[in-house]
Amino acid sequence: MLDVAVVGGGPAGAVTALCLARAGARVALVDRRAFPRDKACGDLVGPRGVRLLDDLRVSVPGPRGVGDMIVVAPNGRRARLPALPGRDYPDHALAISRRTFDAALVEAATGAGAELVQDRVTGLTGDVWSPTGVRLAGGGELRADVIVGADGAVSRIADAAGLVDAVRVLWGFALRGYVDAVVDLPHIVLWEPERWRVFPGYGWLFPSADGGANVGLGLAVGAHRADATRAAALFGDFLRHLAGLSLLPGTAGPTRLGGWLKMGAVGTVPARGNVLLVGDAAGLINPLQGEGIAQAMASGRTAAEAIVSAGPAGAAEHYRRALHAMTAHHRINAPVQAGMVEHPRAVSIVSRVLTAPLIRTGVAGAWSLYWNDLVAGAAPSRHRRLASGVTRAVSAATRRADGGSQP
Image (cartoon, rainbow, N blue to C red):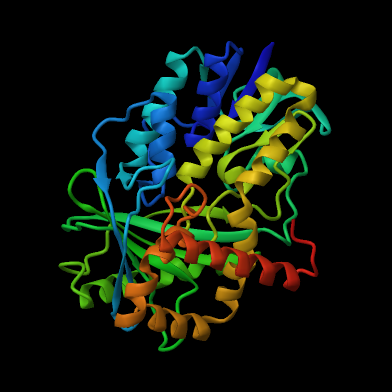
């Protein structure tokens, strides 16, 4: 009998298992894949994630430090968003492949005493409101007092526990590949397949740890998952757009890997009974720019703390309260993301305005803080003041649009 069964060995699950094992819990980390394994991702760990790795005393091999970010508007104008150091996070992110990063976190978890089980989880056992464990495809079950779903955006645990409201989920889909190109700074590329109608998402070109580049195209689709085929259909056109911007030396298509995103902390109940969801399973992707690794790790640590401090009976409520405080940015910007998808012409106009020479100089610092969810913990500055004002304005606007029901 286990204290906790953690389903999914990505950053959220591995950190959950690591923290529980260090606290003396009997924990199994279950994943159907053997590590190291690949994962569709931009391969950037943001500043909050860098700080969390330090807090956990976990080192990962061969990361590449990256600082400022370039945003490219549909008309080719570029704004450089500065990487500003915060009071509780550094002034840089890390570029590292998920193959290397996830394996390092799993190794840390097993080194602390977590048991790694390679098998596929097919569902929960016992009553859906109080499951007794997880059922394994290889036969049998793992019995546990608490089940943590860390099995990604299309979480089987979340579905089995009845924690997903399908009509409210904000889905995204992303494709990425690796190319032989020299990229000094991460680039976010806003692109118009049709003039004045921005692609409902964004493309990226990020430096990779091995000296090449990670190129991808992310598409926001709301609740309509069938629309995700557009990302694959337009990927070649996007590569040609990058070549036209002189960001890629050619348009040769890389081998692509895709994955689902669940964004904005909406449409999913993060915990109920003795089931807790972390990372992508809980919908913790930043709805504005798609970051998820830092939030995944933070939610894993928070879930572990809730289980240890409140026990199986009280962990869900403890975790929900803590996660609510952590996801304010996500909740107020989920309607913004939905609005951007619905109004591509307006986004095209705004992106051109924000990257205009005089305006970008004034707003770049605040843009960086707000877009990357770094306002809380930012060092005092005019950038933080402006970003805090935007936060209050967007919060008030989304609350009014939702009839005052936003928390």
